Length: 438
Image (tube, rainbow, N blue to C red; front, side, top):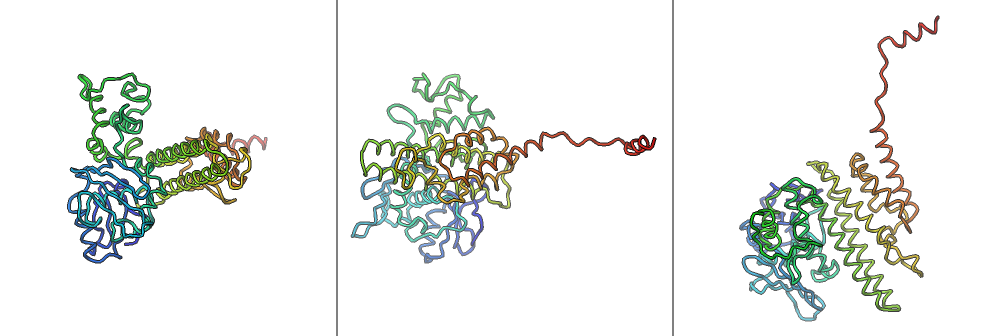
């Protein structure tokens, strides 16, 4: 069932997961990805359909509870009613290795937790696809290639961060990500800007040391703490709320994913800086390539989400897309670090050189120019000018494109502010002609 743009549950919540045709050759997964099962025999198709779609998988409130990456195995602990530990071995071993689940004595395609995990990994690593992904007999997308290598290439921490990993509490309290997301849920319900909503709630810099979940005379704070503590409760809230600027906003999620990638990149570069010589330079290059590849994938996914479909995006969605893309550019000019291929001095270090490799590259600029309406883009003119004034080490052609984008926005604003043309009074031309005749 080839489609130009895949249907997504986040874009159309009423779309039901499951088979998309009578032959069950194409299915829509819980994460919103389409899979083609044409390469599977009937038994393998039945296994996946029965495992995935006997009941709505969301009713089980599955979450990623824990994960680890060993030298030759990636492990993910998926929490359902019971915890499932999915072990994904590296393919470099001589002996046959298979994905296993500690609760199941069956292939991965018959393990509900395993299929859910593979679907989530594909959603994070591949994003939206223009065609249905090819389902393998092992229960994951063929496009992932070697599943273990896909996990390590994409970075397991980045994957887990995008999968609502249950790292909400450690000895020192909740992590900032869950604090932010929980506040966004409540701010959205109150129709209040996040910066103005309940700054007294627990968060970075708060002096609230009370660990009691139930807060007397404060229902909002009680719900907030339940959202922090209970993954099923948190996911239930997300599942029943309609997308808006703060909640279930795919563009905002990708913006946060870019932040996660850049934070991971800086941590890696900082560690490699403690080493000296050729090893440090090699590690720098490796980390910068990974960061550039990850950011390109995020930007590409945003661009694909802006492709025309039967259902037009709302203004807040277009604004969120523009905000995410501009946010990435702002972060890049703030960092202005990386390694320029062939660089010999610190002066040449610039992550842009990996993101804008071709002379005529349109990284981010083309999407802003072609897919974001001018009346939306003009709202971000101040940030665009800030980026322009701080740009360093980018190809002249890209710089010219970016400056043209700002000039076009200014013209749009000028046209919008210009007064309407003055209308002539009836008979005005005749009056003037008569005066000239005199």
